[in-house]
Image 1 (tube, one colour):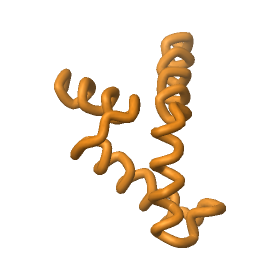
Image 2: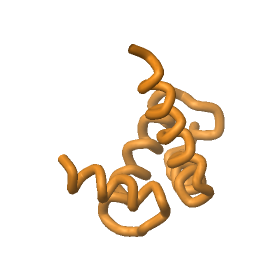
Image 3: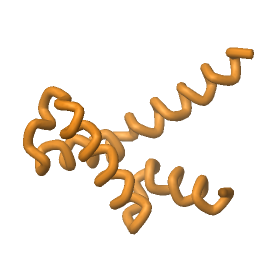
Length: 73
């Protein structure tokens, strides 16, 4: 579990590799299958996922979610 967390956080920090590719694929396909605006085309959905990671927005949102979840008891 610890290794997967480490790999996932590295990927969300922009480190390219298999974990990054898996996150891009999963996020892009979920957006596409759920019909998210701008993700109607699979290629565009994958580009959106890459942009969210590469810009730091994905990691920022994850860390914010973790912070908020610790406030709920």
